[in-house]
Image (tube, rainbow, N blue to C red; front, side):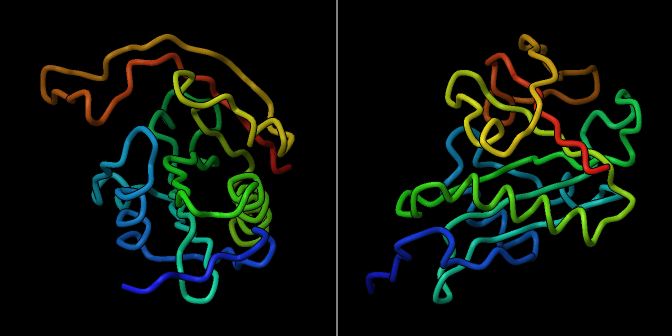
Length: 173
């Protein structure tokens, strides 16, 4: 195994779109809370886009955006994207998450003109929301844990955190 070259600054990386398998692979390695994802849950959405932060052919972060899980309960939900996962490598440069969030916002604004709002849910047990505050996102609400289980489908702790969630939003219009 060889040592990879780590950029001195996140600004030396490129933020590029990638395929869902690449995003899922690195999410499984790096996500702080929910490393498991289901490809069907990512691909069956009306809108979806996946990103990677790359330097010298090495990945340092990945992100997965889809139509919001609760699009049917959100006003204008079909014209939104939800940041479902953002995973950063342990050796990524400082501020990679904030830098990447800004790059993705600009890309979505340019290449997804039907999207007018972005949302993301922050797990309050492990994150403070710094990247959203730094990117001028708005804190919309905080909600307590509510299980997603139904009579048809039971979800395990591995796919749902029991922490309170902060919902952040960014208006593109």
